[in-house]
Structures are given as C-alpha cells and as structure tokens.
Amino acid sequence: MIYDITRPYFTEKEAWGDPEKMSGLLLLVLLAIREIVNEPFYIYCGYSTTGHVDGSFHYKVPCLAVDFGTKSDIWNAYCDINTTIINLQLEKSIGLGAYPHWKPYPGFHLDIRGWLARWAKLKRSEYTKKDDDAEDYVSIETFVKIYGDDDKTWRTV
Image 1 (cartoon, rainbow, N blue to C red):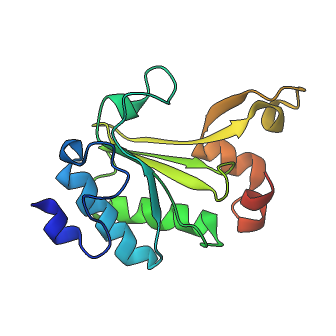
Image 2 (image 1 turned 90 degrees about the horizontal axis):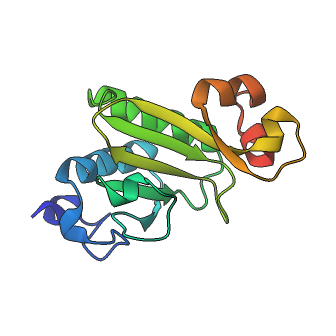
C-alpha cells in the first residue's frame, strides 16, 4: 500500500478525508516535497464532500491543503514545492495554490487536475484598492508583481 512508502512522514491517519481516495501519485509528490523542504508540514484536508466553495477540487480530484507550521520563508517554500513538481516532470498535471492569509500559518493547495495551474488567493482590496473584504484568486505572476518575492511581503499581506 502507498502508505507503506510514505511512512514515517505520512500515514493513512492524516486528514486525507478518505485515505482510499488519495492518489498514490499525489502522495509520492508530497513525499518528494517533504524530502526537499526538509520541514514537517501539516495536512488539513484531502478529499472532502463539504466545507469548500462550489466546484472545489476537494470534491473532484485528489488534492491537499497543507502548511509548514513553523516554516518562516513561505516564498521559498512555494519555490521549493514548484521546483519539486517541475523536477518530477509533473508541472503540466498539478495545481499549486498559495494562501498567504491562512491562519495560523500561510499554506498551499496541491492537486492532480491534469493541467498546469498556479495561483494565490488575496483579499480583493489588496490589489484593487477597493474597500472590500472579498477574496479573489490571482495568478502567481500577478501576486509577485504586486508584492514582490520576499518572505516579509508574504507575511504582511
């Protein structure tokens, strides 16, 4: 079983939702990321049937919501994750989202969607300057253009 390979870092007792619905490929990607980043990270959600926006990939395909807990450099963590995905030659199959506002720590979404997708979720007022607490998704390129790529920026948005 795939969890025999991912131990000691990940077991079937994580917050997968339904561990039988998790993709072995996604778990191997997760294991590679864990080895590269060399930091423990926490799985908040895998497959789910409730609790997300309409059309969420948590309802459709194997995906994960994770954070690194004490990891202080979120931009480098994003780069490490993305580089790992590229090195595994899976960049055209995996979705990767950055969520700098997650509490208590910024986090990431990973999924096996079958096409390349990279994004960040920001409060609308941060990039439109409108007085609005709604949140919107933007490309990673847009996020970097607005805020730069240093960790202090990610921590203050």
